[in-house]
Amino acid sequence: MAFVTSQDMLIKADQQGYAVGAFNVENMEMVMAVIRACEELNAPAMLQTTPSTIGYAGLPLFVANVKTCAEAAKVPICLHLDHGSSYDLAMQALRQGYSSIMIDGSKLSLEENILLSARVADACRANNIPVEAELGKVGGKEDDLEVSDPGYTDPEDAVRFVRETGVTSLAVAIGTAHGIYKGEPRLDINRLSEIDQVVDIPLVLHGASGVPDETVKECIRRGIRKVNFATELRIAYSDGIKEYLSEDPSVFDPKKYGRRGMEKVTELVKQKILVCGSENKA
Image 1 (spheres, rainbow, N blue to C red):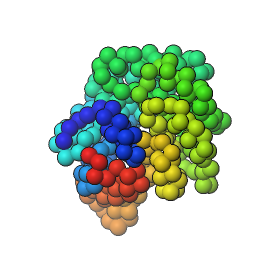
Image 2: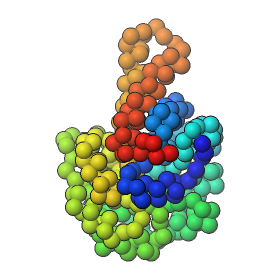
Image 3: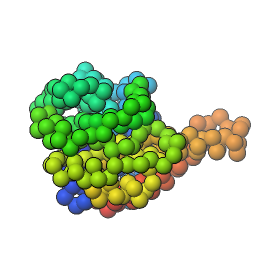
Image 4: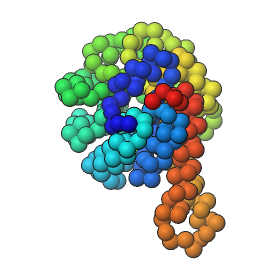
């Protein structure tokens, strides 16, 4: 259908009460696998890359890869910078053609986070590119950012943050964590409802890999409009390759085991689209 920004898809999700799946991709195979799932279920999606993924292949390659696949797809696809670690990286992604930007100043003080996020939002607004920011600290490890002492998002701070930054979506900290959970996560669902009541932009849930589906659905009912999935996709892709190589250790054609990895990712993404309720929303 088109290579688009995240603005319209998140507004539509907010109006109709579902969430857009945001899927981290590491290579060409994962890009194709995610889009295949979206086409099969007629769902919009955001494809994301973190700073370490960008360091692996570079901004131009991911833009060319996702844009080429998106323009041939039957559904709207967005390319999002996930956990943009600096103003410079955010601007590089903007110039290279990313259609959605996240700036993550959550490790900073509230005032510093506001200043950084507002600076990125101002620059992107001039180019009609939406900006996500994070308030509070989601636990766990994402790239080189590790948070051992997570902090919950304060609803009053969220009001000030949205007003003073002009960001278009807000990632909130309610007890989720990046990476693999050691036990079932306990989320502050009531805090999410409080934030949703006082903030008028779409809310984002990070660290959803490993969170029970019913819990994710409850978060969506309480205002989440974008759900991030990363770790589970990496595991699925790797498991597919390991599975194929265990069956045929002599294989040397990467296309063969790559397809198995893609199949695993496509099936997982379809499951997550149904959890988000974004099927037939393209």
